Amino acid sequence: MLIDAGELEDQAVLTAPVVIVGAGPAGIVLALELDQAGIEVLLIESGSLRFSEALQELGDTRPTTPERHPPMSECTRRQVGGASVIWGGRCLPYDPVDFDQRDYMPHSTWPVAYESLVPYFPRVGEYLSCGGPIYDLHQIPGIAQTSIVPGLPDGDILTSTLERWSLPTNFGREYLKALRKSTRIRLVHGLSCTEIESTDTGDRVKSIHGRTLAGHDVHLRGERYVITGGGLNSTRLLLSSDRRHEGGIGNHSGLLGRFYTGHLGGRIARVHFSTPPRDTVYSFDRDQDRVYLRRRLSFSREFLHREQLPNIVSWLVNSRISDPSHGNGIMSFAYLSLSSRLGKHLAPEAIRRAAIKGSQPGATRAHIGNMVRDWWKTLKFIPTFGYKRYIARRKVPGFHLPSRSNIYDLYYWGEQMPNPDSRVSLLDERDDVGMRRLAIDVQYQAGDFEGIVRAHRFWDEYLQRHDCGRLEYFSDDPEADVRSQPGDGFHQIGTTRMAERAEDGVVDPNCRVHGFEDLYVMSSSVFVTAGQANSMVMILSFALRLAEQLKQDR
Image (cartoon, rainbow, N blue to C red; front, top):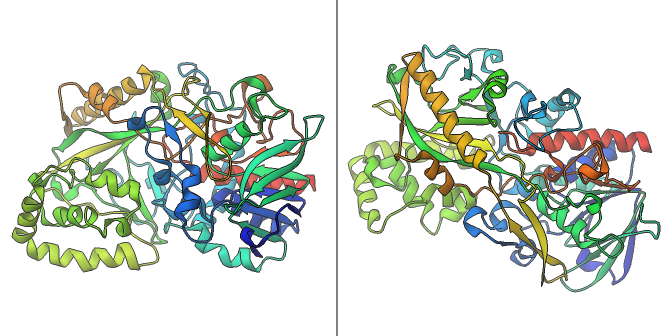
């Protein structure tokens, strides 16, 4: 059942055994799982069924270092479906090493075992439509060449680890019919939750207050409450609930809002392969279910421990499409399309901006020249790629072009080390429903940058040792290049971190806020480390795990 909050009376009271705040992937999966168990749910979403700029603006933040954090309008979506409305579809779980005891990385100890989450991976794959939980190329039948280039074996460096790709699945569209038909789920959209009110004893929730843009107040009451409003909005709601709890609910340890963690990504080198160009696997593979797969360079679990290295991977990409010196008509067409007025309809804004970054004045004429010289290849490319990318149900994640010189840019992606000084906090400035906005202060450490550079050196040594190629850095100071590139804010991790003891975190191993009997947080904010994976698979794994706990409680 769908309810428009704008049609509710002021001071309305809604009740259900379970109240879920946030109708993104975690909230939707949790609601559907509880529905199957016969449990009634109130599913609350600040956004609407369609995009609204006024509602989206409620989530705006004020980064103290804007160059290190993109606008939240690019990272999140206040809409039924949450961030899945704008994501690219990349799917992979954390690695076992992420849950290991890593003494060389302070504050990285998880209070749960990796093995306890593995059983949920198949079900997560069903929700994401990304196939079975196979992330090793050696386990995929029908793929003859298991290395990126011939003669490069798996060892300390791995070339057979995989990413899987979703459709990409928009949860707001894919599961709306099920939400609408359910008699046990009431999805209330257009209602922003502004405060969690606790009882006088301070260990239970009395109600959650919500407000519409029109100024109507709604009160939500239940037996269990789960905050699934995304990495930062979940934290913001806890911080704002400070009438009985100094610093907000969950701030008993002084860590609420701290340890804001994400990923570092960019390019500082290109790889020159010395193997036959026709044998380089530069693009996506597909498995027996036609799911797109991408190979990467990664490290073995043992090597990461031995070298005390953060978890870092890389993959082959085209050279920057914004630089017309590549001389490729297809790449110039992609650049001109994405930088045009139609560009915002062709790719999520964050992906579009990253693709056209680095363009120079007067480059348009050179790009047009590339297209004219390459007109036949470009003309053939447009309808084929257009169908695969925008019409086919399972969309190709991007395009990769073969390099006749066998030279490719190398895109790195690595975890930011946990840092208590990297944090979010409340400002005095308020949004249109009266909530204080968040200030974001992203802080990196020397080890974040050094780890990326060391990873490249290990990749270079491994390529040369096996006579397969070498790396060429873009500058004489790769670390300075890494320092100039951090700016990821798409996977908001750590600000309600999980810990066994109340003094070490915000939630316990079951995602329940320490000191509360009935309040849970279910978002990437509970994660202890970032790993090399994006958050989606792990968020849904924890959501399924929490669903089982709530079923048992009932």
